[in-house]
Length: 115
Image 1 (cartoon, rainbow, N blue to C red):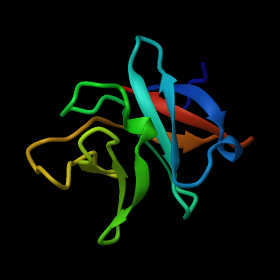
Image 2 (image 1 turned 60 degrees about the vertical axis):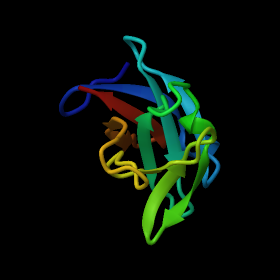
Image 3 (image 1 turned 90 degrees about the horizontal axis):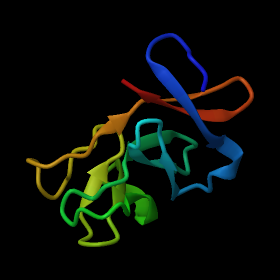
Image 4 (image 1 turned 135 degrees about the horizontal axis):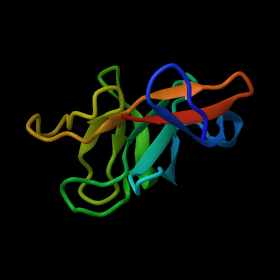
C-alpha cells in the first residue's frame, strides 16, 4: 500500500491494463468493493461496485459512455446510469453510489483512495 498526500491509497492496476469504456472490480483494504473505469478521454474514475437498486456487486460490468455530456456507468441489472464524477443516479436523483478518489502514480499505476 502506498501513502500519498492525504488518506490511504491502494494500487489497483496499471492504467494501460484498463480498456477504454470498460470497468474492472477491485477490493480495497477493509473489504470495500470498487468499480474502476477508464473513459475514451483517458479519465479514470472509481465508484462503489454495488448497485444500490439490486444490491449486487456489478457496476464494474456495466456500460460506460455519456448521457448529455455526463460520463456515466450504466448498471447491467436495471440499467440506471450513474455519474462517474459524482456517483449520482441520473434516473433517480435521490440515489447515489460512493465515489472514490483516483490518482495515477508516476509509473502509471491507478491508485484508489479510501477515506
